[in-house]
Image 1 (cartoon, rainbow, N blue to C red):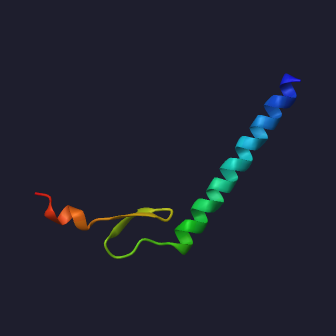
Image 2: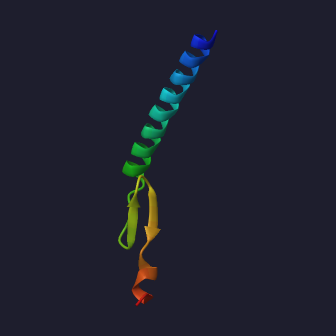
Length: 54
């Protein structure tokens, strides 16, 4: 029984990792960062705040 549970958990983790990778790729290609933004995978952060830091 434990082996069956272990296989189920391993498959679930692999499926979730694959789906996360596909989501990251999709966001990276459909939502690229623009001009004053940096980041990756569709998660961009504005860099305009850095201009006032001295």
